Image (cartoon, rainbow, N blue to C red; front, side, top):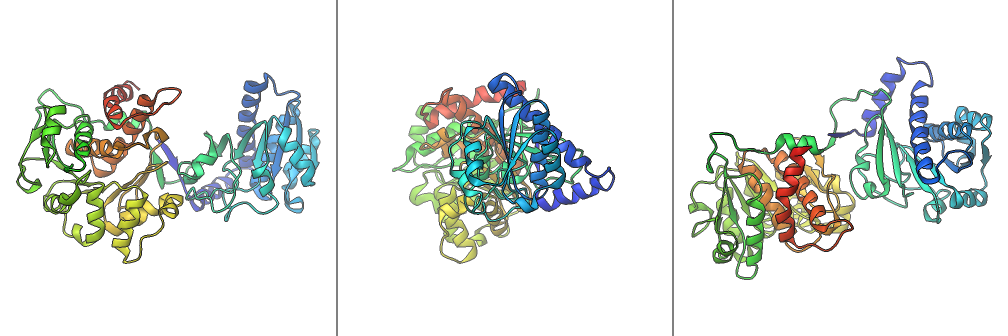
Length: 491
């Protein structure tokens, strides 16, 4: 599992460690790990470090110091290193002295710096550290806009990205690789910041931070959460997931939600709605019940809303009146936004909401009594949006998008690392809803069900799209789920 900590926690952990170590040890550890990564990249690209062109973009403070010390280490291996000082009077004195002693060149002239930047084999971005706010300063903006031929390596965080949130309030320098120290920062895992980070490599420097604020599951974590049948299992012991979805206008949503539910670990799927004929024709193993959730019989979780149309409010109301977990998606979310958080008052079983940013805007309007915020603004602040929804509705929230963020009302946050843009296709969310609902019925908590579903759904999207990617259908994503389930278990 990847762990991420906010800046104040990282600073406190660094201070505690530095108090026990000789002065400068922590920076030397960081610089050594950074230089080793850069050397490997140069060898991979050019076959050697010697003779490579390296440009260090050095801002003020420790981030610039890390970059300068790493540049000095590369210079000692024969690289031609130029440091461009963006804050000449505030450059780290020890790092600057080390670079000069190793034969590195130093300039504060932007014209010279941009020329070196554009022709370098490798650029070290040490402009702004994890404490930076508000995007790049004017003197750094030309580097974000300039063309380059070499690989850009960010020092701890791409300059211009907010460390705690992944927000990019202005321009930022896009990295190919980010070398982070001690622990991940939330902004490296959450878009739009994650998009600027490239491949993220963690260098251990001895930090011992407390419990993480944000986590990202990996294969082994998901494998440990997958519900597996035992020797005494039958379909009812494995769980029955109820699906209230589809309408005369959108019968396919019911088919796709059931497709996801059948592959999510529950022992049976019970369908209620107007698309029963289409569902049974495609999936004859589905249990079909007339009427709504109130009279459907035994289920361990409900999925309500995909393509629900005019019947979505009644289905939502009946499902929420039950004492089992309820996943609310699509038209169900629209109705919940109109009803507001009071619709969930008194529920003792978990509720899982699965909005995209447009639906999130309507939910926030219902929770906060304000006009719906702009969806683009919510997408730019994904972590804050998921937390606002979880707090406002006292429910677990799976916020879909380029980075899927799962937040629960207790404060836990997980981000999904497996997403792909090929999943931006009609019906994909219906499959995800069915999958997550099935995991709920199989006994997973709402946080685990949402996180595991997003992880498997992302892998299935990648598998269906292939390499290189090609357009996929939602049903193809559902059909890829058994294969990725097996791949995760083999990990």
